[in-house]
Amino acid sequence: MATIEHVAATASPNEIIEHLQKDGAVIVDKVLPVDDVARLNSELSPFLTQNAFGRDAFTGFKTQRIGALVARSEACADLALNAMMLTCARQYLSDYCDDIQLHFTSAVAIAPGESAQILHRDRGIWGGYLPRKVEPLFSTIWATTPFTRANGATQVVPGSQYWDKDRQPEPHEIAYAEMEPGSVLCYTGTVLHGGGANSTPDQVRTGVFMHYALSWLRQEENQYLSCPPEHARRLSPELRALIGYAKGGYVLGFYSDPDDPSAAYESVSPEHLFSQREERFGAIHGADHVVSESMK
Ligand SMILES: [Fe+2]
Image 1 (cartoon, rainbow, N blue to C red):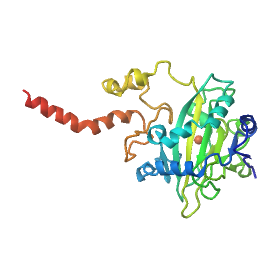
Image 2 (cartoon, rainbow, N blue to C red):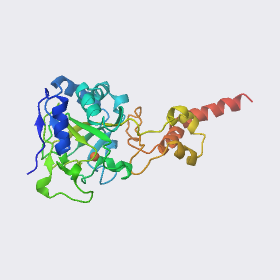
Image 3 (cartoon, rainbow, N blue to C red):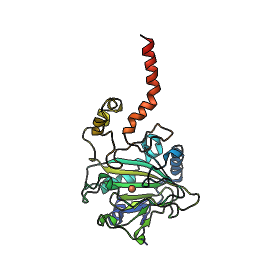
């Protein structure tokens, strides 16, 4: 049976990166103290609501996903800056970039009855256009509950970053990222992995995902600041999509509204931003209309 190597929280970046280069994944045990884990769970719990379940087989009908973590949770913002992970990410990706950027944040809670996610490579979000010799990602999953094989510990196929694209693993080649709360799974954008099945009757498995990518994977002009939503809403959908207010491929460019407590706008295409604003501000526009009518 394949396994994922564990190292102590005192491990050096070189040691962690050696494991990543060999297996594509490694677990660093008990990095966070108990209080930090409790703070993460406390800050995330209001957002892990009934509306946050996945909408297809890949995102999981019994899996809750919450994004916008830097805006929603100070504990998550601190986690994004974890010095050990930043050092490892910068060192691991240094052959391909001069710096990194935070690429993806998500709290993922897998509930009882969830089936295993299809195994995939995260680099696939760029559609296979990045050459294999370029590694685009250094990714982390922080356990805020126990991760066990039974409750949905992440599946990883060690060494699969070197496999041909179409090779599928045998069951014995799949390892499970079993770890304690406060531990972190580090993995690359090229290793096969996926969420695990939760066969327990009553355990929810929660992890906080922080993915770091090459800093150059972005537009030269920051269109979202140069043409922010209050300007973009006056543009045609075609032009909005051209400057980035649309999804690319399956997931690129999605967003979550950090100020929406209902989680109705969780991991949605930017196109929703404009219909959402019209719904949310419709009453205000109505009031404006009344005022202008009364001034005639
Ligand atoms: Fe993934």
